[in-house]
Every structure is written in structure tokens, then in C-alpha cells.
Image (cartoon, rainbow, N blue to C red; front, side, top):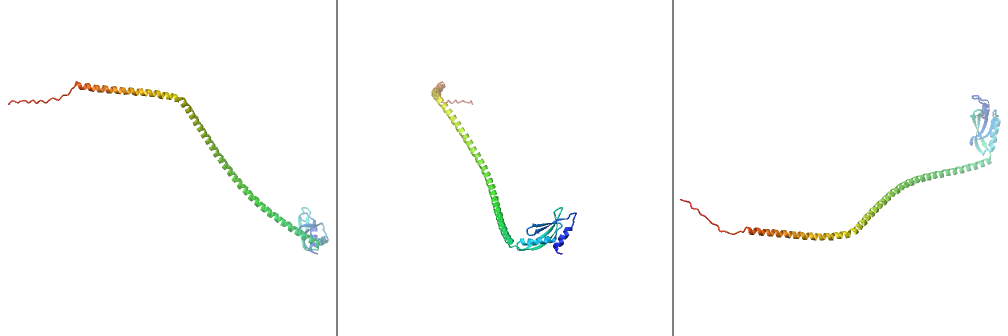
Length: 243
């Protein structure tokens, strides 16, 4: 009895935890594709015949087949046995080669797409970094614009203040000029009158000073006549002393 027959016979009867084998599966080990299913109890010869028929459909070359027993309760694989088979289909081989070529082309496309995606991700990352830098520069520029705005506003305020000061000074000057125009005739008259008074005052002072000088001169002359001064010879008186 061969290995496949022993496996099928054992699992046809094996009960584990009150569970029996529900069915057997014939699976292509290369693709994990299930080709046939056999209910329990299964006939090993029928499974072997199915494996032989698979050889007619598989591409030329050696293939690996799995026969596995599946539990009826949980659906778990209770056991399995490997079988080798020779594929005999040239058409299947050609189709397989075409599938392989197609798979290779598809893989190349996938690899190319992956590379493109990686390149796009790198460019996107770089663009995001540049955008962030640009945003930071824009924020800095906005701050500088606000500073310049504050400076310009300060200049405008200072200019307006200076303009107001100048206008105020000009207004005061206009007022002073108007007052001067009004007061000029009055001041002129005051100057004329003041000049007349000054002339009279100086004349009075001059006459007063001349009068005082004349009075002093006359007083000195009177004092000289009342006390004349003459030169007299000196007289010596000798006294005799009796002896």
C-alpha cells in the first residue's frame, strides 16, 4: 500500500475531539489552487486518478501536489501528504510561459510604478519643504511689511504734526502781522510823542544844570569878598630881663 492510500485510509477513520474528516482536497502546491474535493470516506484510487489527470492539464515539467484532510467542524487542516507529478501539456506550458512573461511584465510595471511613486513622494516631500520655507519667508515678509507700515505711519504722523505746527506758527505770524499793521500807526504816534517829551525833558535838564552851575559860581564869588587875604610884615618883640 502506498503513502497516499495509507493517508486516505487513516483519515477516513480518524476522530479527534469528536471531529471526523469532512473531506479531502487536492491542491496545487505551486499556486495553492484547489483542483478537486473528495468527501469522506474518500477512495484513494479516485484521488490518484485525479492527480494523473492533473498531469494532462499542467505544463510539462515536475509539479508538487498536496492532498490534505479537512476537519468537518472547524474546517482546519488535520493532515496532509505531498505528491509529485509530471505535467504533460505543452499548450499549458506555453500558456504558463505566457503567464510567466505576463507576470514578469506586470512585476516590471509594478516596480516601475513603485519607483515612480517613490520619486513622486520624494518630489512631494521636497515641494512640501519648499512650501514650508516659502510660508516661513512669507510670514517674515508679512512681518517686515507690518514694520514698514508702522514706520510709514509714524512718518505720516510726524509729518502731519510738523505740518500742523508750521500752520500754527504761520497762523500766529499772520496774527502778529495783523496786530503790527493795526499798532504801527499808534506806535508811530507814540514814538513821535515820546521824542517830543524826550526833547523837552533834555532841555529842562540842561537848563536846570546850567542854573545850578551859575548858583554855585555866584556862591563862591560871595565867599571870597567877605574874607579878603593880605600879606603883613612880621613884628619881633624883645623883652628885657632885669639884672
